[in-house]
Each structure stands twice: as C-alpha cells, then as structure tokens.
Length: 113
Length: 113
Image (cartoon, rainbow over all chains, first blue to last red; front, top):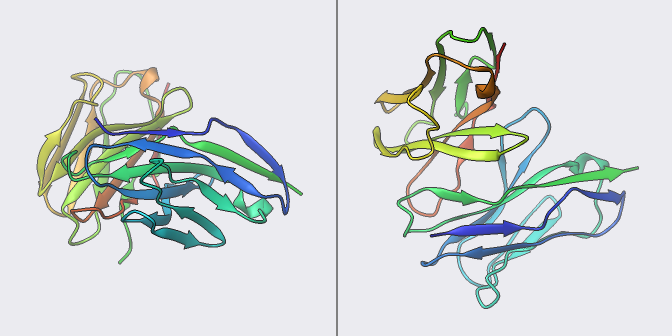
C-alpha cells in the first residue's frame, strides 16, 4: 500500500536559517503530493502541492519539487521566521487507494529568534 | 465558504458517558474523513465516507466508536461509553474526488475524566 516517510523531528533552527524537511513516498499509482502545516491549536491546512513529476509547489516562501525518480518531495525554505514554527505533514493521494490520503508522521519545527 | 465546521470545539465528559462529535463538510465535497490526533499515536484515520457511504472503517478502534453520515452536509462520530484513553483531538476533513487536497476543520478537543 501507499506510505509516506518523513524526516524525524523535532527540528530547531534560528531565525533566517535554511530549512529542509525530507519526505519520501511509496505509491503504486501516480499520486499527488502535498505538504500540510498545523499551527498550535488548529487543524491541518494545505501549504503546497504538486500533481505530477517535476512540478514544483510553492507558497509563503516554501517550495517542494515532485521527484519521481527518487520518490521524494522535500520541503525547503531559504529563510525561516519564528512564525513558521508549526508541525509539517507530508502526504499523498493516489487513485489506487480508494480516495483516501496517506500522511507522514509530521515534523515539528521550532524557530528561535 | 466557511470551511469545514466542527462542534463542539471542546468537550469534557466523564468516563462512561456518551459523546457525539459533529461535522459539516464543505458544500460539494463528496469525501469526508474523521481523524484522531494524539501525542502518542499522531494522526490516525478512523473512518471515511464517499457520497455519504462509509468506505473504510478499519481505523475505528473499538465497537464503542461509530460514525454516520445521514446526508451530504452532516456527519457524526459517537463514542459510547467514553473512556479516558479516548482523550484526543478529533478532526473532520472533506475533499473533492481525484487528487485534490483535504480541508480540515478546527478539531474537537475531547477530554474524558
């Protein structure tokens, strides 16, 4: 079945540091890939997505590129802010899994001033 | 659209009592998901519906848990009787079919004492 493996956390960075959170996936079909973000006390919300190989999703300075050859979708940001502190989830949705999404375990990011 | 609406936002109940969580999905979305989130187990898919029909309830932990979707605009998750280990944040999410992202509600924080 489908699976998503995320870099284990927690991750602690100083403000303006470069961020990478690794995500790799296994899927039998051709999935869409997503990064969701969860701020304290809130539900998950979509951060960015990519629907086919070599697509780059981007939002709020975050980027991730759909790499089919390495089955990866790593999240990056060039300069993090304190307000980026949150839990980040990598996820996929494929046509072979009857419509449900598969989520990674989440990575907690803390950015210190 | 107001997004996915869950109620109540917080619920405190005594062990043995019945608890009902409610969800109104985004209009036009034909998938509805119930998740549970805890520190120990992370984000777990409990059950999901497509066009009001339960598709996969394999994540429902016990017979004490039940979910219904009587129409396209309303779903409930019921726990009867509740136990302290059911304490968690319960999220409802909805989505369109295909490779679309899920939209999450704000969650219901359940505490069973």
